[in-house]
Image (cartoon, rainbow, N blue to C red):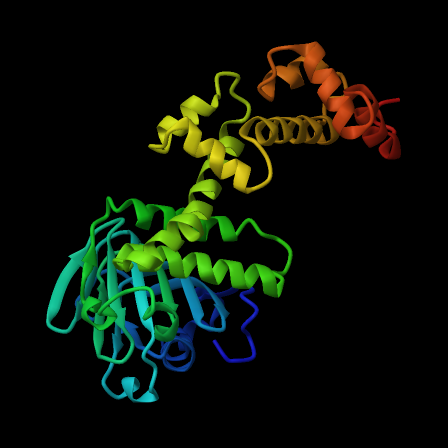
Length: 333
């Protein structure tokens, strides 16, 4: 990534999009050496073809790579460390075996396991089988005040059952759902949240840990809970109690997270159910689908309440909204 692309917009790089005869060469020289500052090459003792498909994002102080790799060997060589980069990397292995080595520490990171690395020292990565990875490269200057003895963390592995790693993965995944370009304010918030989560995963000092719990960790928990609600909004049995239990939180903790966001669990759930109902009515190819079927499919157990809530939100009855959507094509005449 060049310095001119720091708005955190996603940039996808896939070997399959490169000319077949020059794929390995271009990946090594352009993506590896120029963009990622690593030596990337096929494994010569593997039956798995060298393949890569990654998405890069960057903003000042933070670079992120997510995607799939296989049949590859990547090295941050001593020659490349002369670029003066002393950033810290949190490498989260999402799937498949990944061999990681730095400072004499060498191990195979299994699915969900993390590793802390430094860009100012050589490192080796070997991916004998296809797998997925999330890599976060963060300015050392941003992390150093949050973690005591940060330099000692390089080469350390983080257990896959780490709750913070799981929150971090969900938080990063949620960023892909933001369609509009990120404003500078949103980028600053994302940067602070990721720093909080990475520092907590490494071992934040007392002051930073307290701040992280009230900022980045809280935001990641809220996003994970919201994703849960969105996925399960159509289930009538969905309750704040069931959601809290799934996330290992007390009900009051969940309530506080929504209060911080200026809403409540009930209002958020209602909003998601109404939005789902509207999408079904507007996008349905069946103009005679019953309103009651839509209501029940979106988690409403009371048809009268659904109609009142829908009209209050959208200024018209479900039938009105469906008719308005159908008029341009004449499908409901």
